[in-house]
Length: 89
Image (cartoon, helix red, strand yellow):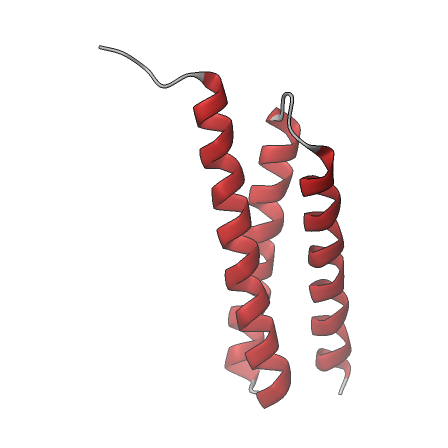
């Protein structure tokens, strides 16, 4: 049985991070526009999942373009701030 190379696993991990961030971004946008309590909770959960995937991928990254991680970190921080501001209102 053959196994995909480590590089392939890394690609899949990054794709999962990217998809989790996109999903969280969409949910945060909807939740902060509608200010619905259930949507805010769901957006918080999606953001936490994206952060977890980011941290796992970052911890195991090898030879990955650091610009991806920097951009992802900035997006996560922006969404975190956006949600925190919405929860204050």
